[in-house]
Structure formats: structure tokens, C-alpha cells
Image 1 (cartoon, rainbow, N blue to C red):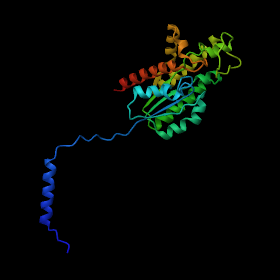
Image 2: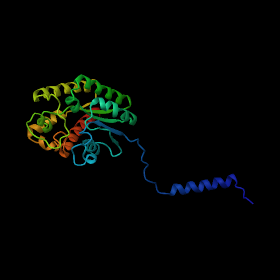
Image 3: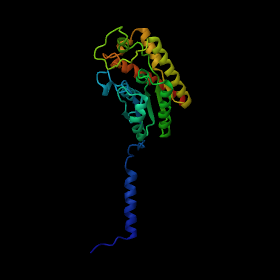
Image 4: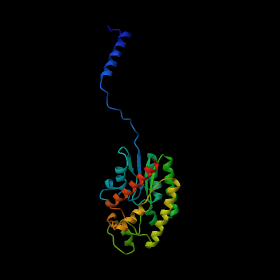
Length: 254
């Protein structure tokens, strides 16, 4: 026969359990679960780590992610070698929007310069990316400008000034003289600065960093054997510039 349980006995059991619970030592504090933040890198060959010893480990976005962002951050590198801004809009931006990242880095422009893309066209593509990413919740967008290109060995080889083995760089036809190339890079960087200011995102000044490296004689060590892409040491230096820009932006927002 199944015994009947009275209300009084149930109350006694509940009282006994409560007493036992009260006598137990307190457990560890409960850590609230926080939603992870997603970081997405959009870019070209340098962002993909091409030219470094191990692109998966040495690419500057990987270094930036490890050094500047919380361990809980989800990191996705969407970069495609030799990508133009238009190609990034077509091939990288849709996946970036699907991921709804909070942090985004954009490093494009060098391929566009040598492909003869007008700076204003590049600026329109850049604005499209920034606006679309912002609309999907990106709160930190870091945009790099174009580094000095006339000092690259692969470009110099096109002028007959030097030779570069195993270069992935295709000489433009006609090849601009250094002063014309410098002027076009300056035009691009003016457009980038204008778009950055208009959208209130963060500028990452790779151009000034490249000029400093050229002035102090370290530029050659920052370029890989193909004469175009950053070496492993070059990836480290690019990551440092992004680190600094990110830190300044964080300080400004706080």
C-alpha cells in the first residue's frame, strides 16, 4: 500500500532541507555569461598574411586580435589576396554583414592604385562598406590608409632599378614614375581621411608608419622576398599600428 504523505510531513521535510542548505559553506561566485564579440578583418594580401612565414599565425589581424582584444572575441579573417575595394564589397562584405561584427578592420587600396581605379570610386566603395557595417552593429571600425608604394622593390623592378625574384606583382602598363605614384597615393589617402572623418571611424595611418620605417632604414626588412607583401617582421609592425590606433580610439570613447 502506498503511504499517504500529509501536509505536515511535507513541511517537516522542507524545513529539514532548508536547515541543511543553510549549514553548507557558500559556493563560488556565479560569473555572469557575457556574449562574445566578433572581430572581422576585411582586406587584401597583407591582411591575409601573404609574404609571412605562416599566414595563419603571422598575419597582422591575428596578432592584433591576440594582443588587443579579449580572449572571448570571435576572430574571422575574410581577406582575399590582391583584392580591390570593389571585390571586397562583392566577396567579403556579405559574409561580414552576416556575422554582425562589433569590431572591423579594413585595409585596402594598394591594389586599386595600381589597377588605375579612381580615388573617388575607391572612396565610394569604402563608404558603402562602412555604412553597411555600421548598420549591422559595428561599433569599432578601423580603416587603414595606403602605405608608401614607390619604395617597394617589386615596383622598383618595373622601373628597371632593381630585380625581385618570385614577385607576385604585375607591373602596370604604363608604369607610373615615382613622383606620379606618390601623388596618386596622396590623393587616395586624402579620400580615405575624408571618409573616415565623415563616418566617425578610426584612421590607421600606415602611410606615416611606412615613411618612418623608410627614414630609419628598416623598410627593407619589412618587405618579403616577393618585393610586394609584408614579411613576418612587416606583419608585426602593421599590427602595432593597428594596436595603437585601437588603444587611442578606446581611450577617446571612455
